[in-house]
Amino acid sequence: MRGKCRQCAKLLIELERWERRYSQVLAKMGQLEKQVRQLQEALAGRDKDSTNSSKPPSSDIVKPAKNPNSVPRRRGAPVGHAPQHRPPFQAHEIDVVQSHAYESCPQCGGPVELLPTPSEVVQQVELVAKPTLVTEHRSRTCHCVACRQDFTRPIPRQIAAAGLCGPRLTAWMAYLKGACHASYGTLQNLLRETCGLRIAKGTLAKLCQKMSRSLAVSYDDLLRQLPQQSPLHIDETSHRENGQGHWTWVFRAPQFTLFQITQKRSADILDRLLGREFSGTLLADYYSAYRAYLATHPRAQAQFCLAHLVRDVKFLETLPAPEDRQFATELLTELKGLFRLWHTSAEFPDEATFRTALIAQGEQLERVASEQAPNTQAACALARRFRKHANQYLRFTRTPGLEPTNNAAEQAIRYVVIDRRVTQGTRSQRGRNWCQRIWTTIATCRQRGLDLLSFLEKSYLALLTDTPPPLLLPATHSS
Image 1 (cartoon, rainbow, N blue to C red):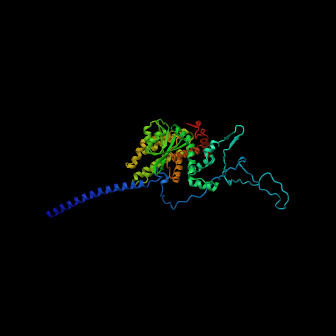
Image 2: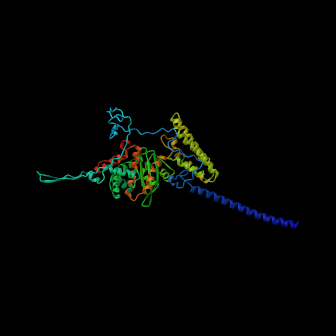
Image 3: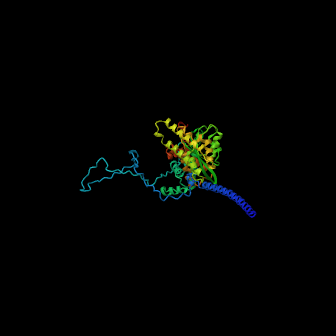
């Protein structure tokens, strides 16, 4: 019995040792599971792209492989799409009429009578052999026999100030440089090959600087009107100047679009451009600069972009925790319902019924986002954000005419991103002014349906003649 008791005591000691070892293994496994979860979340964060974050589409350098089982999109117009035909030129738009008719009968050689109605009409547009007109202006001296004096008539000021290139050619160069992303080398080749004109790159750069000065008044006028605009879509993108990081801001107002290049990407820029008394509604993403500006400007309101919120919710679907993925599915269902209502407003009998349904769906989204979040880090962060800013996310449900997304600003700034890739940024304050002014002029002319080339020519003529230039937004259209 005593031997068996000694054996039992050894076994008990061994059992206690293994229990301690088991507890240590369990603790180690808990630590490893936590590390794996953290690594999976970090990996998901590194895999963010434009579909599940605020990154622009241009950041999606490596695209995922296409699904081999997906059906390729049919080329050309969709089935049932009505063909598009441009309207024919009117009589006052036709420069030359060329008739093709037989002078005699092609069969017997006898005389023929021309019928009044053409059997077929083809309208053709062609470039002229030499699209430029070279004019030599001469200042002549006359001698008065009676006064016995010489009098020299000077060349008109606007001609002397313009120099080699006239107003229309200068406007065309500015159009190609600003609106078509053409380099100075491309402009050189185009002028040489189409017009037989050889111009140095420095001369082309000076032409753009002249045009920039001619646009200064209209640009500054929009800058003064910016604080009175509402709603105001805002976005920003990076910009390089002499290798240094800058930022291009876009402000899309109901009647115009304005660009501004700055060294910082902070709330101070908004405070300088919009002022302390801004009382309109900003449509922007969830970037901290906008929230900081709103926190110090109680009169300003905001509509945070729901499209960016959708991307953040989609990021939850990539996390390892099943609770996060389930929460993301529930949020996306409510967001899709909200967008579906927004895009089917025409199906409602009246505005009041539509607003009631929209507000109810927004409240349902708010309940799911703030009350049903699981106890995970990512889900709780999103829930805290929605509890704090639900009013800014759902303001469009209660405000007629307010968009739920910031797509207008993102579409406007896409042009700048393309130009940045071509030009690689600017080198000086003069280059920065040129970009701000020409981008603003291009976007506003297209937004308001103005003839861009004509506006550039009129602005340049005003600079040459020292007369008031045209404005992008006349006083009658100001807010």
